[in-house]
Length: 135
Image (cartoon, rainbow, N blue to C red; front, side, top):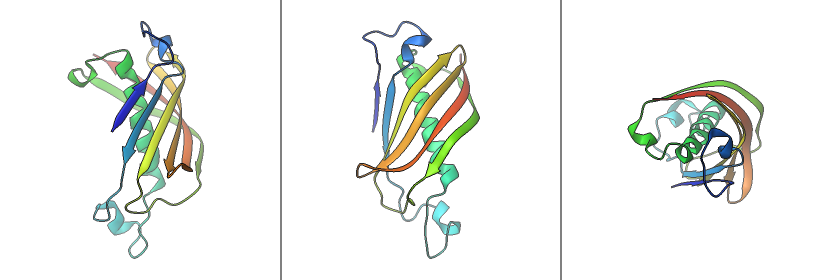
C-alpha cells in the first residue's frame, strides 16, 4: 500500500515536492530471514532496517515529479541520518505505517522527516538526507 500526496495542486518543479507526504504499510512476517539472527528467541526488527524502510519510502515522493518513475533508472544514495530515535521494538506481525514528509528539495538532493507507527503509536523516527538522479 503506497499513498503519495502533494502539498500543491500541480507539481511542475522539484520545489513543489516540499511538503509532500508518502505513506506506506509493511508487516514483518515471523518467518522473515532477518529474525533468525536478530535475535534467536526474541525476534526484533533491526533499527538499521527501519531506517532503510523510511529512506526508501521517502524516495517515492519523486513519483510526483516523474509519473513514470517505475520505467526510469533511479540512482539514490543515502547521505545522512539525523535525530534517529527508536521508541519501541518492532516484532513480527506488527502492521507498520511508514510516513515521510519532504522538508527540503534541491536539484538532486532531498531531505525528509520520517516516522514509523504501529496502531497510531510512534515507533521510530529520523530525518534523512539523500541524493538522487533520474535518467
